Length: 113
Length: 112
Image (cartoon, rainbow over all chains, first blue to last red; front, side):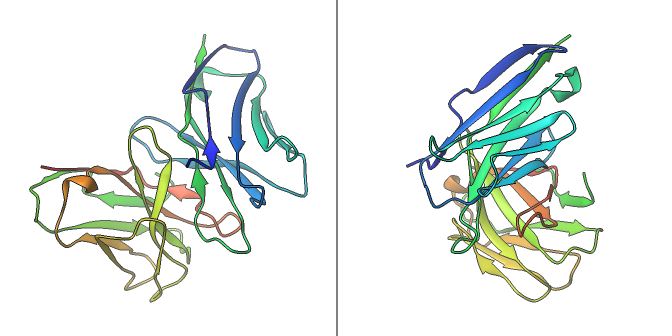
């Protein structure tokens, strides 16, 4: 049973436009969410996170939105750049009782010049 | 990549062989982790180490052992490799609210 789902395996966006990557979760006890970015032949790198007490967190061109009632989070990249082309993983955890993150399967973002 | 060195980058083993994957970080972090990534799945935690000399099981520890002899190095050992352990293995370190921050470039392991 996948508790964290990224239903879009791939997404293509034109350079300069907005990229929206989506993630759904089923465990209402998750209270912390992270996004990681992965380039080919490299390991993932932490990108941005959000606590369940917030509904938005922004860091430069990257904003994560959390909708707890819908159990949905999204990563917005504005404006998108070719260097943003990578696989993006969302991950979630219930910090009080769990140690390991639960990862989604990833979305390949391609930003077209 | 981000201060984490994994060796080897690629390895092919036969069923039943043993192997140790090495990981070293140069950023003086306490926390280190071993993950595996399989096709179509997210990363899954095998073992983690909160500090030198301590280790704990993650989600999928069976068939693996780890060693954290010093702050810098965290090794993962397969005592008797099985085809189900064919995967890409990532070591990570650092912490973002107690979660991994930086991952190595991975070891691609195939077991025949």
